[in-house]
Every structure is written in C-alpha cells, then in structure tokens.
Image 1 (cartoon, each protein chain N blue to C red):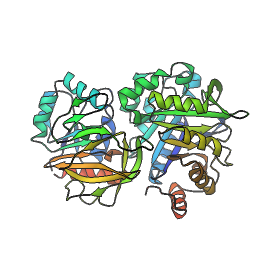
Image 2: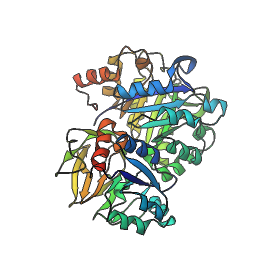
Image 3: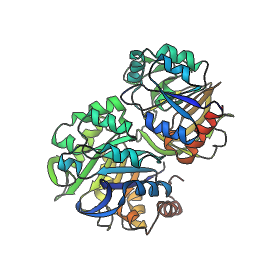
Image 4: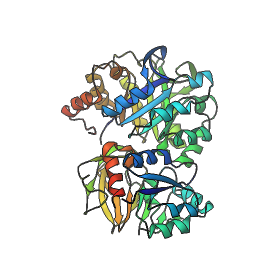
Length: 200
Length: 251
C-alpha cells in the first residue's frame, strides 16, 4: 500500500492536525508539506481546507508551492478537502476572482441558497458515477461546513442537496479527488474514505 | 434540513462541570471521557466551553483540548477566553474546527469577528450569546453569565452576522441547567433575526422540550448538557424520539 501521505500546510488556518489523526487511524503515515523537498517523501497528497480561497492561494505562493504542487498532483493521487477541493478549480470568487490550481475545470462561487448559510452539519451524498474514493460509502452521511460551492460538469462523483439546492459534493478526475465535506469529521464513514484513498 | 444534536461541555479543566443558571459548579466527569462518550452516542458535534477562562482572565489551556480531541472524529467547537487571532489559530491547530467567542467581543472589541472570519472563514467563527431576560427584552452577558453588557440580544445577533460570524450559540442564563424547557420566544426571535445557523441551548429537561424548541423556533441545532449528563437519555435515544416525531436528524 502506498500510504505515505503529505498534507499541504498553507499556514495560519489549515486544520492539519485533525486530518493527520484521521489518516493515521486509517493506516497512513503522514508528512506535513511545507516546502518543495517534502514532496520527495510521499506517495499521495492531501490538501486540507479551512479558510479563504484567496488567502490560501496567497500562502501557497509565499511558500513557492504552487508549481511543485501542480506538478505533483499530476503524478500522485491527490485528495482535496473542502477548501482544498475548491483550490483544484480554475478560479475562485471568494473575496475577489483568484486563479486556482486549474486541475479541475471548475469555478468556486457562493452557495446558491437563500436560506441559512453556511451549510453546516451531516448530510447525505448521492453518487453520480462509480468512484474509487466513495466505494462502499453510498448510504453514508458526511459533515459539511461551507459557504461556497464548486461548479463543475465533467468530473462530478457525487452531489448533495441543501435547502432544495443540489451542489457538487465530490469530484473525481483520474486519481485526483475532491470532497466538499470533511471526512476527518465524519465518524467511521470518513475513516473509510481515507482507507479508500490509501488503497488507490 | 437535519437538526444537529450537539453535546455541550462546560469545562473547568480538567473537569466537565454543570452549573445551574451559570452558578455553582457540579463536577460531571473528566473532559476526555465525556468527549468520547458523547462521540460514541452519536453526537453531531461537541461544544467545549471553558467557563472560567474569561472570568479569571487566564489563557486557554490548549493541552486539555488536544488530549480530549485525540479520538474525536466529529467537529469540535471550543470557547472560553479567546482574545485574538493568535488564540484562534492555536485552537484550530489544537484540534478545534470552530471557535466560540463572547466576552472579548462585548467587553473589548467586536472587530475580532471581522478579522477572524476573513482569516479562518465564517464557518469557523461562532458567537456565543449569554442572554438574560429583562422586562420585554434580553440583555447580553459576558464572563460566563456574570457581567451585564449594554447590548440587547436581538440587535447584537444582527450585528455579529453582519460582521461575519458563521453561527450563533444561544444560551439563556435564566433557563440553563434548570431543565424546565427552553426560552422559546428568545430562541424563535433569534432564529428569525438572522440567516446564519443558530444553535439553541439551555433548558432541556425532557424529550418533549427538545421537540418543542425544534418545532417552534426551527434552529439549525440544539446543544444539550444536563439532560445528557444525567444519563437518562443517550443522544441516540433523543435522535430516535425526534425521528419518530418527523424531525430530521443525522444517523
């Protein structure tokens, strides 16, 4: 099993600790990616997610991590979580229009719901296609905590409905995966998702 | 939309305690044990509030949070004594997913909401309201219900939403720990005043009380403490009861 996972640390707001303990519980070995050399140690990448799109990209630029991160995503299985999923997009519109990592043809916009925002709590996922990362998790609930959503039409693996609005809750393009929810906060189902990721 | 059921732990490290009307501190158990217990019972989140940190002006005890959250795979909100961005960053690196702030905002500087929300995202910033009923209104208190501010609850909740808070934790000093039901009017008025999630707390003594506040006020979540600490109902018992009454809750 290729189980050496690097979590990209983009500074002040990243929730590295929670993701680290969930990956370790699933059987992975975790490294924190802080500079370009750290990519040599790992088989897989996790991009965590708490914070703001524009600030996260700025932090990655400050650490000269944008180019090496994109190169490594092209060769190593990668999982983006919440904001980490959104960063895989072409553009984000949080604070102002900001270039993303452009791995997935998508943009990130405010959640199109006129009721209570942010969307917070456990919710179901509806699988749209066969998915390596969601295998065996069809009937599970996952924890969401977000105000923005990814708009994408080609790589959708699952959707979720909140206040009658359907949005993309998981994408999968080759071995690049993104989930809008927080598997590290989703009880046993989340650990199982990390196991699926480790088994890829 | 599913209503979240949240275990609220009032903490005086290393113990979880339970005051009545924010007074008196009965020991309930150790932090780590109770976090594990309510996680296993199916709590959707844990709210951890150090109820003496602000009052004593002491720093947040990060180690007790790190230790307690080690085996927790649900969201953890942490509050008590938060004063600046650095505190929040440390908490998030110690396992907190959101921070719960009250005293500093009212006693010192409400701009902390704006700053924190732009750095950490609004979903990570919860404003805690300690409400006490006056004649026809509710006043915000600070320092664990000890000191009255000059702000009215229904105005303040709108202001915190505007400033970028992502959630409100609503507690009632009059009802907390009394177990005779929620302050239903307060809950409904706060929920109706804002478009961010409101988690209501304070007063649940029976399953009916919980059902009543969900049906009447339609909060995003309910935070429970006394009713769980007595062990008369587990969180799963409460969820089963709510499901039977057509209220949507998570597994």
